[in-house]
Image (tube, rainbow, N blue to C red; front, side):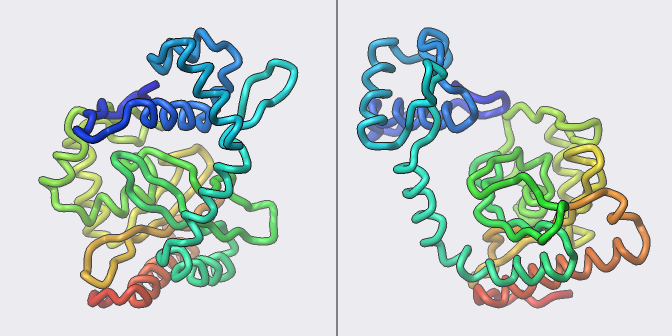
Length: 268
């Protein structure tokens, strides 16, 4: 099932349809659809019901999904979780940035996250959480819309405007809150403001009562590679000394991560 706002995927000349269908099914289940009703799932995925059943049994055999029991459907299995963990742990970006995230978490007392751009979404690769109730519910592998999330905004702010137009052209830019830009011009204006500020600042922009600050991370070629952020109660993001301390901590952490990746950029 194609999510609202996602561009239709154009099949590649070398694409293998059965593999594409299996991946669509995994993403469908990963998005919280249990496939309890196979007819509904087949319709959503635009897959023949018999083909869907075969895919499910194949994925069960490979431990990519597992049954919930009592006819409740399926969830992602330990086989897929293991592959995902290997993929994430194998990224130099995560290994390099994780100590920076941990230090940022300890400095601010808030959850810190690392994410990359994937199409029009952000995929979270890692996080560090404080030993308190102020723990983010975002896990590695979670996806959020780039134009609405602070990490996504920090990355988009560093993109060439023409590249951003090409990326977002035709996408449905749905509102997450009343602060979310829902037009291409609005996203471009938001990106310009974030670039000028040197960070993306959010006070209830994505979720009521939650504040966030994000800054971009650059690689050895000086290109944006990812972004990191912190998030916590919005009263900590007031426009006074605590807010300034958060900005300083986040931008310093992003600069440190960039330096560790060999970026030629210098803070300020």
